[in-house]
Length: 304
Image (cartoon, rainbow, N blue to C red):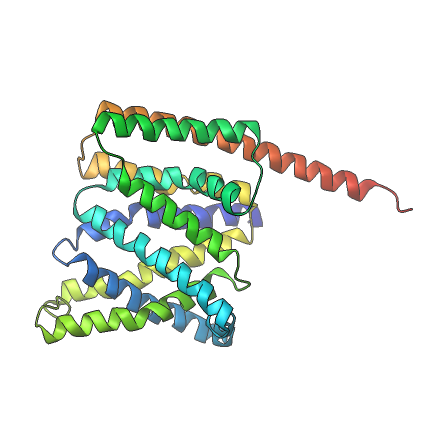
């Protein structure tokens, strides 16, 4: 099987797990979101650290937490991802998977804007059109519902900041996430200990719930491992397009499985976002094609 095909299948696997994960979290509605977050953090550390140990790569954690600057960057990333995780879990529990879908659809466009503001990147005309359509979607949804879609906006923004911060680290995604959950683990264990002392802990009450909580570590780790393997085999433009499978599956979970209502304002917002993402993808493919032509042209030039 060609590496490109392998990469596409691996990315589909990763996005399918992410996109269908609301079904898993719906099974744990009886677990308070902070306790569920703490378990996700702790068991993720066990899985990630175990994976690095098997691969003989635990020493690479020094690149994420071994130096003051790297540790600070990792801490900021950890803060962003734990906020993102918590809001996602809470959204599932309060019946707002529709909003999480909108947030992860909006994320690429928010990331583009953060790139302009923070990294001083320049956008093409098509990219500005896409950002404009996304802004219009949020504006009309805010006007129609009388409140901003804060869940979607916070999810997209925290994940966007997380992506920018991660660019400052030289280690790979699995090592960096291991460093993040390593820094978060003391807080997670502290909270679980408090719950245990107050006799409020859910873990251990029954085998079914305890097993699902332990499974949260694998559910967090597996798609990231698949994504990392996919990134080594396909270009970033293809990865960017395939990642829309994640919010699409979340959208289907919200509407088809969980029967969350869709107002006309939501339909308009999703329509505008989908149009924006189509334009954004076209612009991305155009830039990628131009970049390839430039590389081919430069490589074809005879040496002086």
